[in-house]
Length: 374
Ligand code: KG4
Ligand code: ZN
Image 1: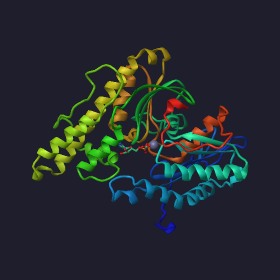
Image 2 (image 1 turned 90 degrees about the vertical axis):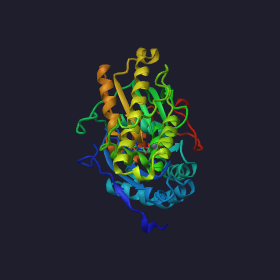
Image 3 (image 1 turned 180 degrees about the horizontal axis):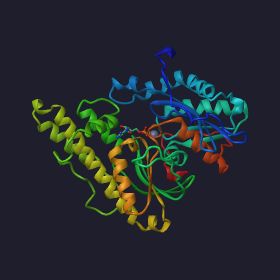
Image 4 (image 1 turned 180 degrees about the vertical axis):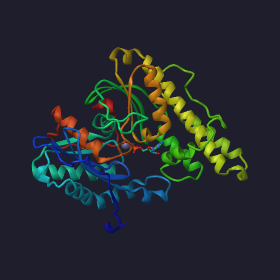
C-alpha cells in the first residue's frame, strides 16, 4: 500500500465548527483495529472535526482483519489523518489542550501506532496525555451524542449511572456504568461476541466482511420466523451470553440445505431468523439484568447500547421497547459513532481529563484491558 491510496472520510463536524473561547479541546486518536481515526472534540460536546481512514477494503479479501497488515496501514495513514483533523477544524496543535489515544485493548500493532503518535505529540508540545481504554470510548460516547431508536434528530442527556449493553466485534458485556472509570460487570459472553457471531454468519453465507451491516440489511427483507435458531442460556437465570450454539445451528442448517435452494430469499430469511435469535438473547439477558439487585439498587435511568453492533436497528428497536417497559430512557449513539471512531476517544479524553486522569509516567499499551481494571 502506498500513501496515495489513503482515502479518508470526513465524518463532519457540528454545524458551527466553532468552540467557545474558554472550552477545552481534545485531540483523540483511535487505531486499535481496522480504522485509523482522529477527532477534535470540546468539553461542550462539540465535534470540531472527525476523520476516519477505514482499512476495510484492504482486509476484505481475507474475510477479516489481518493484524500485521492493519498495523502497517495505520503507520502509513496516521500522519495524514491527524494533519487533516487539525486542518478541518482550522486548528494547529497549539490550540489543542489535551491529547488522548487508545492505549488498549485491541490489536497491539495498531494500538502501538496511535499511542506512540499521541505520546510523541504530547511530549513534544508538553500537553497532558490521556491513555484511553477503547471500551471506555464506546461506553462514554453516548454522553457526547445520543439518539433514541426511532428519532435520530433527538439529542438525549445520558447521566450516570446507566445500564449499558456493550456489543462490538470483540466484546459483549452488560455493565452498570457508575461514572468515568467505574464499571460494574453484570454479564458477559462465555464464548463469541455478538459482532463476531454476525461476522461468522455472513462469512458462512459468503456475504463478505464485516458481516454485521450486511446481515442487518438482508434481514430487513427476510422472514424471521422461517428458521428456528436456538436462544442459548435464555432458559437460565443470569445475564451471561453464549452465541456459539447459534453459529453451530446455522452451520448445520446450511450444510443440510441443497445448494440449489440457497437463493436470495433463503439468505434474507436466514439472516432475519439469525438476527432475531440474537435480539431475543440480548433482550432476555437485559431483562434479567434489570431485575438484578445490583442494578435495581443503583436505579439507572437510562438503558444504553454502544459498540459496532449498536448500529443494528432491530437491536435498537427491541431495546427501546424494553426500556419503555421499565420506564427508562433509551439511548444509542448516532450511527457514525457506534463503530470505532476518533470522536469517542477524544470524548473519553475530555471525561478523563475532567477528573484529572492523565498520564504522569510512560504507559505501555495493553492488548487486553478489561473495563473493570480501570
Ligand atoms: O465496535 P466495533 O467497530 O469494533 C470493535 O471494537 O470490535 O464493532 C465492529 C462490529 C463488527 O463485528 C460488525 O460486524 C458489527 O460491529 N456491526 C454490526 C452492524 N454494524 C457493525 N452488527 C450488527 N448490525 C449492524 N448493523
Ligand atoms: Zn470498538
